[in-house]
Length: 193
Ligand code: HEM
Image (tube, rainbow, N blue to C red; front, side, top):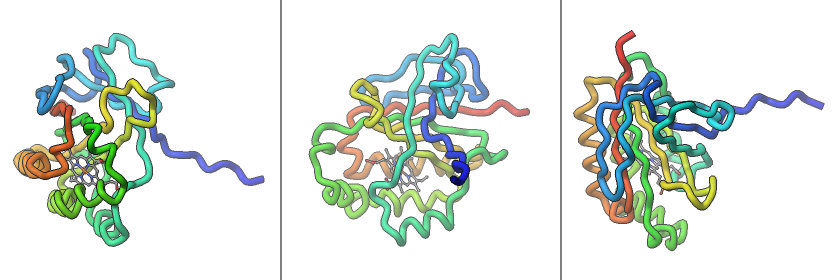
């Protein structure tokens, strides 16, 4: 028998309250209901093991296999992207998103057509690598009462803040976003060490 390989965490919690390394700078409802205000945020792997005390709200999501990326895109992304936790990346965006019933009624090939052929999500995103690092979390498979379908998390340096605004503006103007029925844009900063 061989020893089990330790697996990377896949379930992440975003816990807002009065504590945590990330200072919440703004919370803006882009579409639909906002989330309540809070001062700080913890991002924790395996949130079931470390239940927060005094949380004002929390969100959770799980990383998963890719749904839409094609081989050539995957190779290009892998060559350009950098990971989370870079010391210079002291700004972050936590953007939970829900898509409507019309999106979920589409077939996989129809969704890919909206996502890339019509909206160029990957082509647009690639222009902002490696400045922006990201992690996508899915929520639908966690249960029927999750408030969002996706929790997206991005990290970038202060000097790339304007580029990040340009990126979200471009994606929100794309056909894919016509299916978004709830989106909250939460911006955060790490205090200097
Ligand atoms: C930094 C540049 C970005 C790149 C390179 C990028 C790339 C990608 C890729 C490759 C996927 C598909 C993963 C799969 O195959 O399942 C994806 C999905 C997604 N991205 Fe982005 N993205 C970027 C920025 C953003 C931003 C700024 C947002 C939010 C405002 C966002 C929201 C999403 C969402 C919600 C999905 C899931 C879509 C679905 O499954 O229906 N992305 N992104």
